[in-house]
Length: 192
Image 1 (cartoon, rainbow, N blue to C red):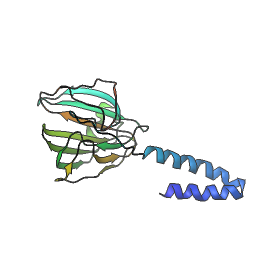
Image 2 (tube, one colour):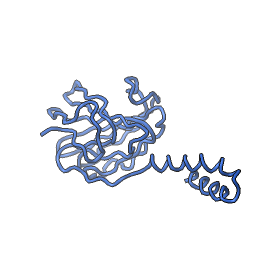
Image 3 (cartoon, rainbow, N blue to C red):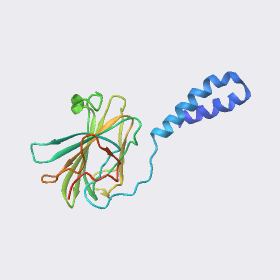
Image 4 (cartoon, one colour):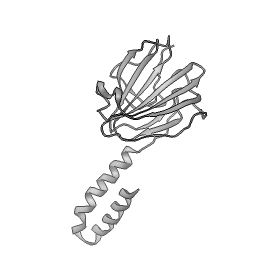
């Protein structure tokens, strides 16, 4: 990582001359921030139901015309941004859709850049949408169509603040509420 290399070089130089401290302090702080942002802690996946794909706060729960319910989770820059599979199954499709970069908590973010995932699971098809935000300019999928996936397995990363929408199948009621915090791979989204 170039940031860490720069921090190491300026840090070593600062040990020899105080002038370098002015460069070392911001690069060390930036490196620390980047390491914090790109952290990827181990999780113990939930075994029952459909689990959250993102760390964050449930922004909205909306019924969809086709009977599904969309659970939208907003991820701030302070959240872990590695996203996880909501259920075990097979990746049916992964589709990148170009778009804008409006803040992910804004209603107009419906037209932002996104990656749409469809999983074939024992509960039927589950759609998951990773949405870029103002700062998040890159969505990195880890899997391709046809890949088998375990519940809670890492599927991709959204860099910086963004949103993840999970569409619960028709007839499935949400177990979360607006404003509730979720942990990817652990928080259950559906109710028995």
